[in-house]
Each structure stands twice: as C-alpha cells, then as structure tokens.
Image (cartoon, rainbow, N blue to C red; front, side, top):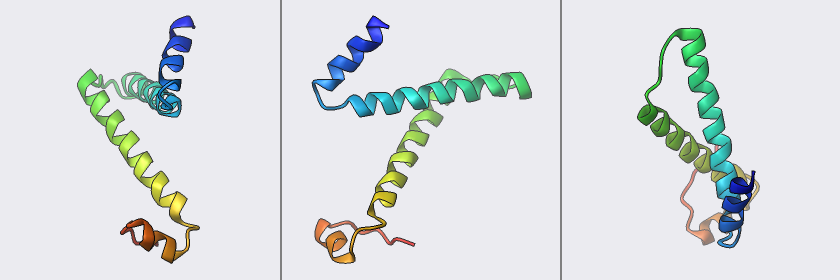
Length: 88
C-alpha cells in the first residue's frame, strides 16, 4: 500500500493523479479479461498483446470522453476552440 501511495504522491505533484488512477483501472480490467480468456476459452493472451489492447482501450475511452464532454457545448464555442468534430 505504501508503494501505491508513493506512486500517487509522485503523480499528484505533477497534476497527473487522475491519469494514474485511470491507467490502473484499465490495467486491472485487462488482467481480469485475460484471466477470463484462459478460464472460459482456454486461450492465453500474450503480455504484449494485452498491453496493446490496454493502450488501445485507454485511447478509445479518452477520445470518446472528449466527444461526450462536448455534447452540451454551443457550436460557436466548438468552432472557437478549433475542434473539428461532428457531433451526432
């Protein structure tokens, strides 16, 4: 626990504590999913593949989070920010 708190303290000083918590949540989820692949499907996921999937999911989540946060923004605010996203 002290190691975890030290890691959070390090990133807290850099205003990146949320990034660490987000990555840890995705890491734990990916470990769970890889374990389920072995248990239920008999398929062992290679560590490199698991990391690749993890990074892709984090990027997709962050991209979607940006779009979701812009849903309520007025169109003139989006244009002023230079964001070129078509919101469906």
